[in-house]
Length: 244
Image (cartoon, rainbow, N blue to C red; front, side, top):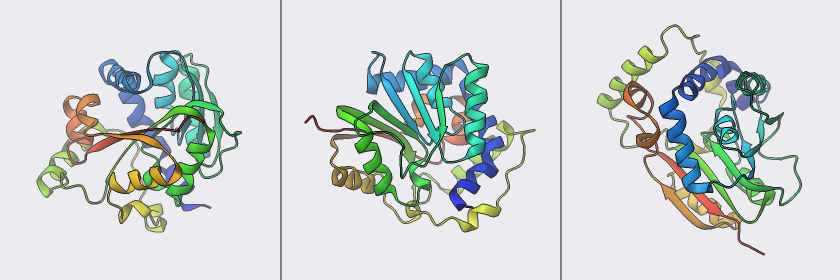
């Protein structure tokens, strides 16, 4: 099996529990929704969520009135996304799919979003070129990620604090298995981010590229900030496909 797919299949239960907890925190959900609305506006859009995981970003956006199509490589993540959207009464088109070969025609969507996905893909330039291809001219990409390997915020002290609060936050949740990590070879482990992201976006043809730094300070609060936002700069990058 593809090691990336196996990685997320294995982690799907714990990751689902983590993000559902955030979605059910009204303050955190509203903060994410405000963040997306500041980038994408408030008019209803036809949006593609690539690497949707358990579907939380899609749910946040569908709750705002956007028409969501969501894809993920992991079958288990797709199952969780369908269950979560159904449980919350949201109508989202959720499919298993590969970010490197999206099964949609050119210029299909008013916006493309992706959260915490690009760092894991084997060919980020291909993923970005697919985002560019399926976007309509003049429309916007917005994705959130981080430098999980070289961030200067990841000091020993901050890592200890984060581990303490993460353990408290995940108390009672299923333990994560580590076996698949050794099989993953990640481009992001050697990257300088977001500098390398900007280079790849420019190469793909995007314009109006903007980096929003330290998103975690806007969307995470209290112990969840110390557990998941204390050791890394979470950045959102926005870019536009030029009008024809």
